[in-house]
Amino acid sequence: MRLDAQFRLFIVCFVGSFLLIFFAYVGGVLSQLNDDSHPPVLFANINKSNEGPHSTDPHSSDIIEPPKPNPLLSQEPFINVINDLEVIKKTLKSQDIQLERFRAILADKRWASLLTVPLTSITLFSFMKQKNQERFQFSRYPRMKYRPPDERKRILVTGGSGFVGSHLIDYLMKDGHEVICLDNYFTGKKQNVEQWLGHPNFELLRHDIVNPIYLEVDRIYHLASPASPPHYMYNPVKTIKTNTMGTINVLGLARRTKARVLLASTSEVYGDPTEHPQSESYWGNVNPVGPRSCYDEGKRVAEALMVAYHKQEQVDIRIARIFNTFGPRMSMNDGRVVSNFISQALQNRSITVYGTGNHTRSFQYISDLVDGLVALMESNVTEPVNLGNPDERTILEFALVVQNVTGCNCDIVFQESPVDDPRQRRPDISRAWKLLNWKPKVSLNDGLKMTIQYFNEIFSKKAA
Image 1 (spheres, helix red, strand yellow):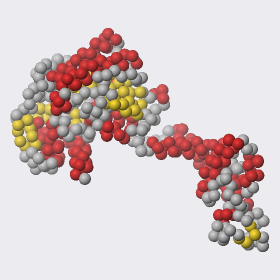
Image 2 (image 1 turned 90 degrees about the vertical axis):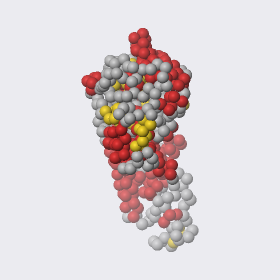
Image 3 (image 1 turned 120 degrees about the vertical axis):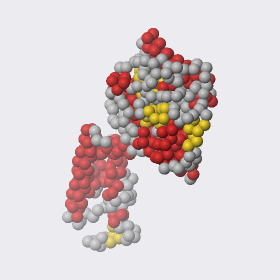
Image 4 (image 1 turned 60 degrees about the vertical axis):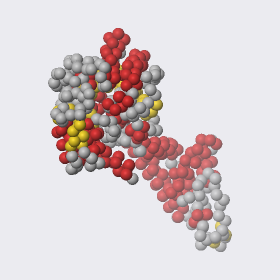
């Protein structure tokens, strides 16, 4: 990352100050060496340390007593002169000792020559030391873009510890914004955002968005909701509450703070589609009382709430309809086809295909989705936008791809298809391309390789 102009100025000043101190010290040493009648008193205890408590000067028969340690200075060689200068500066400030008087106290030409360096240089060095300590502190975090305060946004991400939310937070933090991650850990994991813990621009709140939240924010990404069938079927009431009451609370916060809010909706609002591919104008074919309805209808209500608040309360809204997404940090047991196939292949278990394998899906990599979410948030588009990869594959084709990428020789077995499982799914992304200039960049094979690497690391940690 390129150093900003301010830091380059600090570097120049630091180098200049160091050279001034160094040459002043050298000048003092040379002057001392040319004057044999004035041995280096200040460092006598160091120079004579190997000669016992009393030593004979080679140019005199007098016994030289080692001076008492100066409390103002460290008793280390010149390598600690920086620390001594810090002590000098603090002493000058706290006791108001004049520079001339301080020279007399030291009574040593080498230190006196050092003190000819302006105190502004010492102050500048102290400032640079502090800045470098701050940079060292932040070096444990991923690299971030610097934004001045007036360009920095305060962004709330609900469900921020989840699969999609944590990747979005990575993007926003690296882009130089302040981020508040809100999660109740129903499906999210604290480990997904642990790389940002302690950073002054990051805040982690354990909170259920079903309950109101009072914050000051500029942007809201509302991602909170179980998204995989095992999770939302485990607690359908909680799923409906999160998508209705949670969305109402988010919209209330957006109305109060004048924040822009983006809803992470889903391709499930199309249900088992009769139109192919699915465009945003398609109303969907959803079973309102089926096993998936808590999620499907919950998201449809959430979209209706977004539009209602936009029309009635002038809340600035964005709606993203997200299609199947995969990548690192996705749960290994979330019941979806990508994680199921990869987990089974890496464990040399049979890959389970539900139905005949002729059902179709399209899969986008997580980084493409994050780019799309940010592009939508920063656009002026208030109507729903599909975010997905139009590269459509049958489930059987996808199983063969996973076999090939993992190198697994495992069998493929077929089981009965779940109730209400959509037969086909492919997004029409014309609106995203036209209005956001967005389309997926990562191929299925490349995305699978990165995801498989992540799953391998998880299995290795469990085996250790």
